[in-house]
Every structure is written in structure tokens, then in C-alpha cells.
Length: 109
Image (tube, rainbow, N blue to C red; front, side, top):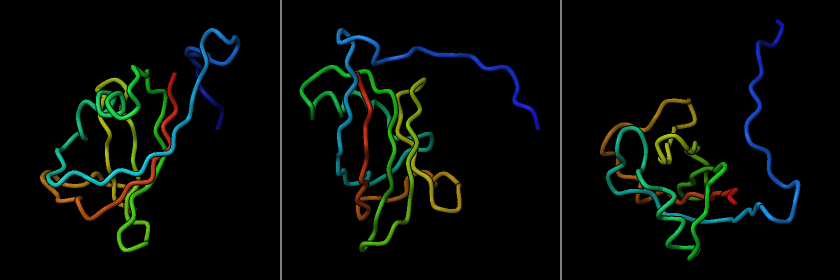
């Protein structure tokens, strides 16, 4: 299979004027997860880091009782953090994830 057209997005790290950062975070899940993801994720990170980051990517997983049970995806267009079960489907609306601890790596500038 041949790759299709490639669109190149913004690039970071070429100069010291626009540094990029990575931050490990441990976050407890929502007690009523909303369909489409937890909204205003950048504001949550902004409040915690006391800065105004532009989030580039979020990678991570959720653990329950020490076992990996979920993975996450950051939707930059909608500023939401989506949560999926390992089978690949999004967590249903109003699911209580307060027993899940998410270990995240947030890349931002």
C-alpha cells in the first residue's frame, strides 16, 4: 500500500524562542465521564502548571488496582481528553472513572 498525500504541520524545536516541554502527570478520572471527552483539558493543565500552554499531544493510560485498563487521546480541535477501554471503544457517557488513575505525558509549548 502506498502512502497518500502528506500535510506537514507546524514544527517546533528549531530555535530557543519556541521551546517545547514534556510533563508527567497523574490524574484521577472523572466521576461522570462525558461522551466526546473531558472538556477544557488545556484549562485544567493551565491551572496545574500555572502557565498558558499550547498542548501538542497527550499520551498515557489509566490503571485500576495496578492493571492498565484504559488509554487516552487528546482531541486538540475540541480541547477534550478522550478515554478508551483497551478494546478501542470510547468509555460510555456518565461512566464513573474516579477509581482510575491516569498516568499521562503531556507535550506542550
